[in-house]
Image (cartoon, rainbow, N blue to C red; front, side, top):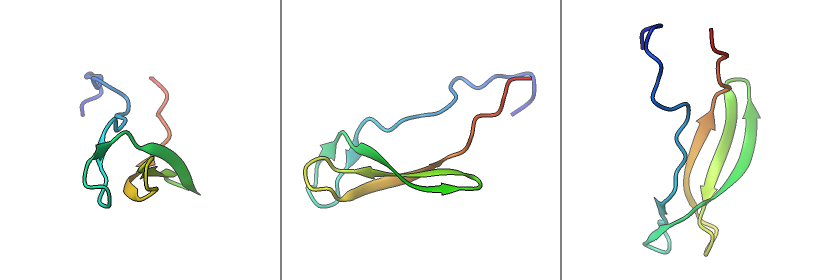
Length: 65
């Protein structure tokens, strides 16, 4: 992205994910798994069965210039 354009959002958050075990869309719980040099790694867990529905690495936000 160019320096002159600002992104429409800083970070997206999952509101519904498909659980591989329950076979339906659920509102996942977010759990911190690891703190890495490039950012924090989170797991998205199903609230009913506890299965992993996904994961993400959140990089630290860059300060505005």
